[in-house]
Image (cartoon, rainbow, N blue to C red):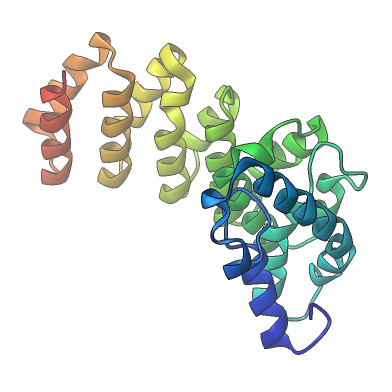
Length: 239
């Protein structure tokens, strides 16, 4: 089916991509959670065999003329690849356009199992994407590094990005740094865009440091944006 008409290919890829954490077969695997442990084990073994069989075809679809197929194939490919996969993921993504990489980054962001055990080459590729020419690739890389954790330098770079969506993504990821986020949160809370400041306030509330309270009080009283003032007031009321 993955070698047939464009609409059929897309339908099959959507079925394979239905779950954020594993390869699926659409309605055939929708009831997995209700199966007994032994049945789930057999189903997962069958899906593993399926993954090995379709992986080469999905790789080829990364260069398909249809952009929707390329992006969906990238998302499926992330779930097909594990730490034990012989074909490295980073070189495959590095050869593609930014839209394919963004689709793969989003899949990795949603799937914690898919991030586990990835080699340094993949994270080097993602880190390099934080300096890509297109803002969507930079944003996708920042979001992924944010959920992975420990990406202080990448988030600092993201907060200085010229694009507001990238800065907003970086601000949203700051709670993952714990107490190390405090200097970066102070910077994000002074961003020129109110949308970024609101996101930074929400991140500050998650971190919950008393050292941020004076800044939040100032924003609640004097920020020119009503949305920012309201967000700061909500954050100050949190226990």
